[in-house]
Image 1 (cartoon, rainbow, N blue to C red):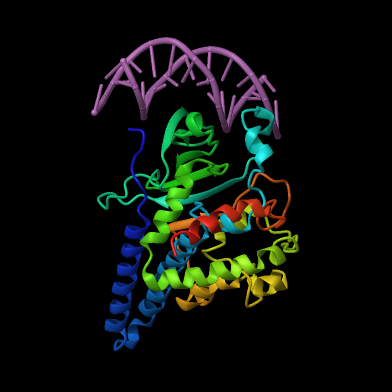
Image 2: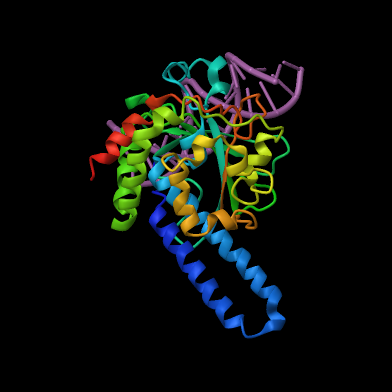
Length: 316
DNA sequence: GATATTTGACCCTA
DNA sequence: TAGGGTCAAATATC
């Protein structure tokens, strides 16, 4: 009905972890057979995919629950309060923050459909799209009327693989649902992870004012769509975080700490070779800029972050 | 009866 | 002007 269900990240992470472990075990089983070197390489890729997916999910968990960690952390395309308030004005429609992700539907896993992202959505329309086999469904936050939440999303089954849905989000949740979701995600994490997150968020609080006002991506000629689609699948060949991004990102007290956990589970290495298609995070934007992250210029409004961090600390 | 979904029509943007 | 996005009445479901 209204709410198709919650996208339980814990289940996703659990499943991915199990898959990774199984792949690891399989790899170990194959090691004596040198003739199966190719299999080993394939398994390495599988493991990389799992690691990437887990890294993204873990990153999302403490970045605040936005569907895309990249946008949640990096975007400046998030709607300002004035933009959000003007959402009902159609002329502003296209200027809202926009990002998308592809979700593979695994029937029988309980993760039915691509709609379980932790929010409550209400379908308000469906249209046949030119050139697309399947219609596009339009959803908006259930709390649009009660809380004025202007978040919307579009769900479209991909032509190539009907089991994969492309979900495009627009606007940020301003409803209480957003906060509850963040808190819930924090609570789900292991105590050890909480410690790590607390540490990182402390660092974030200490440094965000230093980081974000001056932080900016280089204006590369890479098209945002391409970058977005491949950011976590095969990006580092073209997008070298350490090389392309400004130094503050690599400071010991900067968002690099976000990625320290990625490194812990190998994402730094694996980003270069993996092709995770289970959950592919796509940073996208309607912006006209050619920045790798659309119109992400990192002139992030601190207001986007403060409430989340403060909320998070209530639980520690 | 309340709430969610469907669907045709309308509006806006490119 | 075509196509995408949204509205709102009709319909379905609980």
